[in-house]
Amino acid sequence: MSLVIAFTGREGAVMAGDLREILMQGPDTGICGFEQELYSGQITTDSDLRKRAGERGIILRVRDDKCKVSEHEGILVGEVTESEGVIVRRRRLYAVCGSFAIVDIKGEDCILKQKGQGSTFVVLGNEITKRIAYGMIRSEWNNGTFPDAVRLIIGIMNTVASCTASVSSAFTILQTRKKADLDMRGIMNKKI
Image 1 (cartoon, rainbow, N blue to C red):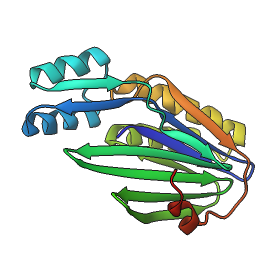
Image 2: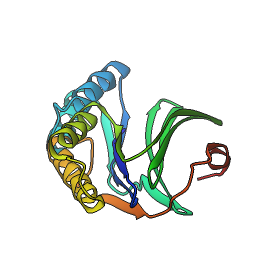
Image 3: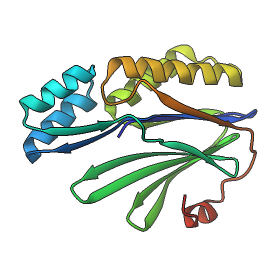
């Protein structure tokens, strides 16, 4: 799991996602401890990431080109994935002007977890990425403009990348001006 963050405002919606994907092979206990270190913020650099993996006997495959955000017919879509063996869990965020929805996907099952309206920030990620993002939102957001929200999201993405090796320093950022009610039945039936 990495970082996807969105803002849904009256003037538009913006969503950003990092590009890192980390795949691990090794003993289950080693992976469990390694993930705890990584997702709690104890591993901050790429060199530390590889060093700690080696110390725990874990083989890493790290890529920084996995696009986690996209736009479909004016709807912004972000997705974080977590896998354990053959089990893959995905959490998907949909955003338009003033509205968002979060869906959990397991196999063919889609479960609506949350739906909201109004000007708000939504963050999907691991423990450390969410803690940093929500901390910056609390301290820096003062009901600003849509451009202020875009600047804050860019700042969050850069800050998080400097604090944890669980995300890439590069990211994708998209905007939409679409105003629509999110028809979740229609969206979840589409293959996005």
